[in-house]
Image 1 (cartoon, rainbow, N blue to C red):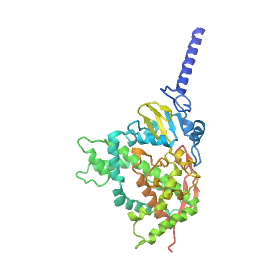
Image 2: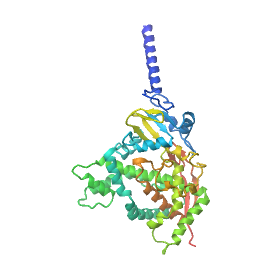
Image 3: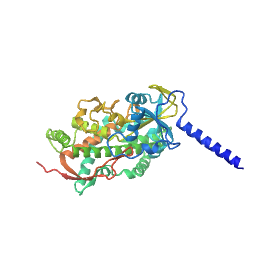
Image 4: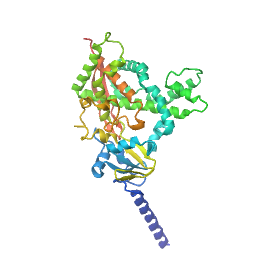
Length: 426
């Protein structure tokens, strides 16, 4: 009996050793990038999500780049992943979407965004959805409607906040986000029951599509899409604006230059209190430099995920079919070979740079390739208009908080509380 138990124990141990060996040494027809797969099943997930309190590249990536180089393998939430901090490979991944790569996010991310969200859609339906969204965030909509809506909202919010003893900036900017799904469902149901309504806004365009005999999208896709759009707008813009105001508070020379630009806009108007025009918005050159420098340092999106659709050979390495690939924007944004003193908040570094009108290999705050964020221009407009209303009419001082934490996304664990007051008229 003891002999059988011993044989069984040895067999189990042998099987475990083989399993662990296979986990740490995945099959590959070529040469995998260097790196560690971590513990079986768990991989290096805990190290990846370990909190950090600096603006620098997260230790997980920084340590592995130093050890393995700009491209390395790991395992996150049970999925083998190649992490790239290499500009050329990043660009290759973006440009080859639909051919060699497709959009993909780990299951934990998809539980947040929804299984039918835009991040999970591919090919024709993704292109269709993108064109639909552009009707909401396209240049004509920004110029004709959203510019005035955003200014009205910013002015009202700042007026209300100036009456408070202090406000927690990020939560104040993103008020309403906790009830967005119920609100979306209610609005969609109301529009679906409104016959012969003209196509005025994005909801109307969605309803028109859903009422077709053979709609391209489902109601679930529509709701998930709108939630992702609002989530992106609320979370990313509120975090970026909070960080921008923190940077302005800590860098008075930047605030002075920004204020000069916006006071000059008021000074050139016939009626100082008239609304912002499209021409004025497009003239906010230093403001756009502040926005780009903020988003470069914010690194709100720590990783952009894709999945290899087939076996891929690149840079002397093999990426097996089905493996995830994570493009790491912070590694580019904080690279001292690309940006001098990369941790320094210096909006002047963007003067005359082409990245101000889009993205590049060196600037990926809004993604890249066919999935370059369709809401990028709307986010910039929100930030620019808010800053205009703030610096021309108000002054503020930090009250408490302002510490950041990355897990690996940007957060403010104790908030950022400021006191806002109206400027005295000269």
